[in-house]
Structure formats: C-alpha cells, structure tokens
Length: 125
View 1 (cartoon, rainbow, N blue to C red):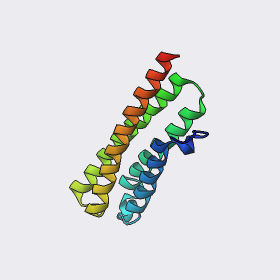
View 2: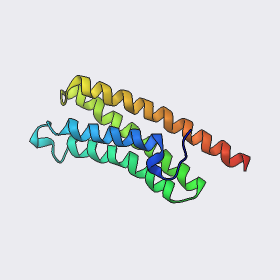
View 3: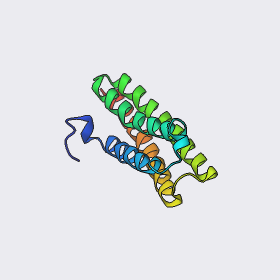
View 4: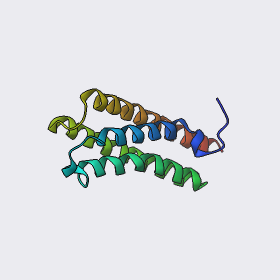
C-alpha cells in the first residue's frame, strides 16, 4: 500500500471525487426547472462526501476524522436517495444512474471499512 501524505491519496476521497464529477455530468441534462431543485441537491450531496473526508483528514484528530467520515457516509445515503428518486421520475440516463448508485454502494462499504480500521488502530495505540 502506498504512502498517505494527503487526503488526496485516500482511495475513499478519490472515489468520492469521481462520484461528484459523475453527478455534475448527470445533472447537466436535467430540466432547467430543476436547477435549484434536484440538480442542486445532487451536486451539494456529492460534493459534501469528498469535502467532509478532506476536512476530517485535516483535523489531525482520530475522533474528528471518524466523525467527518460518518458525515460522509450520511451524505452518501442522501445522494443515493436523490439518485433513486431520479430513477422514479425519469431524470437522467438509467445506465449512468445505475453506475453512480453502484459506486455509492462501493464507497459506503469503503467508508465503513476505513472507519473500523481507524478505530482499531486507535485502540492499539
């Protein structure tokens, strides 16, 4: 495993950024009436995931970092809910939505595993 010198080296942050990029691409074709509705909600939730990972890493406290990772988990579930609603109302390409939902699921699992790993490591210190 490579060295972690920055939050940008974290796989969870990298995947979160990929998801946010995909969400911005997805919402580009939403109806103009959704600029301040679903588009905005999806963009904000997706950005929140990566931003909270970065902010938690920058706190340099294990407890704070874990709390921010948990906030990222919550934002991931929020984003999944928005994407599922998009499927229901017919916004966005179904293949793109399926891909984003799959990546959100993967990210949620990675975040849970990472939190457990950090907690175990803190217990060993």
